[in-house]
Length: 127
Image (cartoon, rainbow, N blue to C red):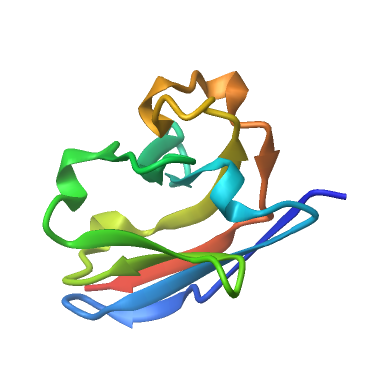
């Protein structure tokens, strides 16, 4: 059974940092593209960052450039989202997702091709 479990969310002050974790089971995170998405109440879901099954990465939101980074720990079958210099507008439910990019890069996936989703973890940035 393929599962993704996010953790690491919480309440942080403006300018603070959080590291979100996405632990995969039933598959290897190296074999799929992994993406981080977020959705705030009343807003559309947006892609934050993703890592391809090969070596690709992209920033799906210009607002996080220079502040958020992704990394992958194969031994722990875990993908991380390091978030620095957090702003109130970063407040959202954050989700990780996995999909098959056929080694073409995570940016090639359409929304419906992100097949597996975690349950989400809430990030709240207080002003």
